[in-house]
Length: 109
Length: 114
Image (cartoon, rainbow over all chains, first blue to last red; front, side, top):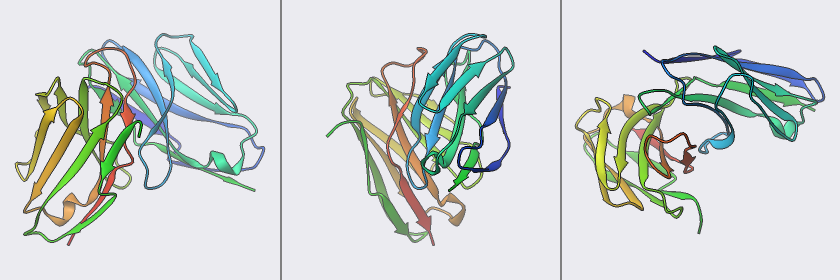
């Protein structure tokens, strides 16, 4: 069965304090790994897609990387507006998306 | 209006009520999805439609009844719900089913069942 886990469950950072979020997956035939950002009471907003091990994507203070078993979302010098829940999802051989439980990030000024 | 639009944003209903959630996508996509998001749990896939045809029902109780009259509109009809059905219900769309591409989500309907 395809599974996705994320750690930590919650993370509190001071503004400017860089860190990484982890997404570990067990799937048969990875077609793609997706990162989303979700603000309270809103739907997830797409950030990145990664297709193969070694691939990296960047957007402003965020950088996503992918290995054969996990993905990291690196946040460099975060700002309070980066506070949100970050969701990881994989699309496997069964074609449907399997989501992780998310990491709730709080960046304090 | 662009993207995926869901109405209503908030809904409170009793266990004997009947209500419907509406989703409309303005992206020209062919696949549409209903997801349920409960507190501290991963998104749960409920239904998938491709070109108006239901392709997946993820063992969802019959008190949830989806309807997809065309590729742009998706409804979720609700009747005799239970308090544990309280959650954020999210609609999503993608260009096609089964391709390696992202989902676009609406803002969701926050449902409370009393």
